[in-house]
Amino acid sequence: MQLGMIGLGRMGGNMVTRLLRGGHEVVVYARTAQSVQQAAAGGAIASTGLPDLVSKLAPPRIVWVMVPAGKPTDDTIDQLAALLAPGDIVIDGGNSNYKEGLHAYERCSRHGVSLVDAGTSGGIWGLQEGYCLMVGGDDAAVTACEPIFKTLAPAQGYAHVGGPGAGHFSKMVHNGVEYGMLQAYGEGFEILARSSFDYDLRQVAEVWRHGSVVRSWLLDLAVRAFDEDPKLEKIAGYVDDTGEGRWTVQAAIDENVPSPVITLALLARLASRQDESFSAKVIAALRNQFGGHAVKAEARPGA
Ligand SMILES: NC(=O)c1ccc[n+]([C@@H]2O[C@H](COP(=O)([O-])OP(=O)(O)OC[C@H]3O[C@@H](n4cnc5c(N)ncnc54)[C@H](OP(=O)(O)O)[C@@H]3O)[C@@H](O)[C@H]2O)c1
Image 1 (cartoon, rainbow, N blue to C red):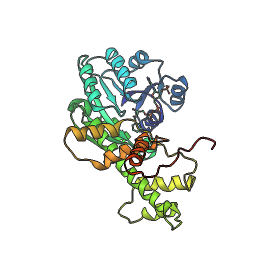
Image 2 (image 1 turned 90 degrees about the vertical axis):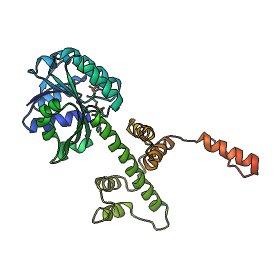
Image 3 (image 1 turned 120 degrees about the vertical axis):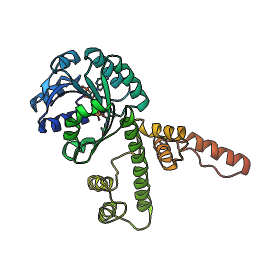
């Protein structure tokens, strides 16, 4: 079937390739002309902007938005909703906050446009492995988009999980779970690395992949990472986030769900970004004040 794709980055670009391979016709737009040209060279139909993209689609139109979550996604959806006609569908495949997604759904509804939220997982491997799709939205709109979802997903990797917002919410929790799993692997490998046994971490990751209770795709990736850099000496221990972990923790608090693993994994990421902990300084200073406990001197640059 025919659809538009806005955003041709790590996700959108590969998704266009998978859709073209699946026999779909894809009209593409990204701000960088080079990305558009690259997609067109692979068989997509180029467009010069949102009005041009919309004009190249036959109604009822389907447009997938795959740009950074937050303002870029919101602005793109609003511009599209104003250009589209009643009965058209916008799919937000980004990691949008589900609450913002619900606001966007309402704004689209005013134009008669249905917003479908497709929580998408698979990263840069999705092109070959397929993308796991957790889709929320109105029944009719989701059903209309199913051929697209089925091409993008591996077998059984697509589900209509609920009404508007349910896709983004389930993707958010998925990423929260990912935080906990990453943290557990990270801690496990650090304990191994610091022990007196001089482990080959790649070897341990490899053996855990076969028949063990903790085998997983993340371990497959750990083997690749240790292959590239056996002691991870080229990588700083600084872990970024794009919001889903903190939203999951907030949702857990809102629902009175104790979620210590995900919460601590989020806090560990925040700690990873500090060269020096001011709270630790305060604790050291107070212990020194009340108990005379020793403090370590600040390491001065160049000293
Ligand atoms: N990467 C992942 O593993 C992953 C997994 C699941 C979901 N997601 C979600 O998928 C979405 C896209 O992620 P990505 O990894 O593909 O990002 P990306 O590689 O940074 O690509 C982003 C795309 O959006 C465009 N863009 C950036 N800022 C924009 C703006 N202000 N207005 C309009 N377009 C803009 C970029 O265009 P130009 O380059 O032309 O500026 C580019 O085509 C995000 O919402 C992300 O949360 C990512």
